[in-house]
Image (cartoon, rainbow, N blue to C red; front, side, top):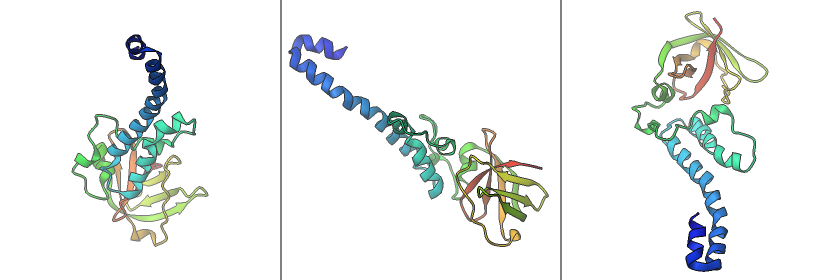
Length: 181
């Protein structure tokens, strides 16, 4: 509309220049969305979670280029526009997920009594209270535990959106889990 109205005043050369710039503005929108998303990831203290958020923030460009979508576990980490950035939350390193989504601890500082991995590298753990938790297949993070089960102390937290995460004390990594029993 602006180009057509301006063409009456500036002639055909102006109209051609205006249309020549349109692809630049079309390309800028996904780039701007990606940059804005990445800036909303900046408050994430855990390096692995930040990287997943970074990859999730690139989704607008992936869509524009016709690439396969980023996995849900990455895109859900990107705070929505206008939402408080994790940088503004009073989060301590290693407990960021619970602080961001406002979850409550379901099992706090429990020792593992057993753990195992399936063929996909997903774990199932048994806590000292007898509860059994299994890592979700949609979680892109894989644990590399090698020590005795009782050497790991974990906290299970429920998020405000209904998800549940398990964190190992001192690791700063949060795994998405579901309770089996």
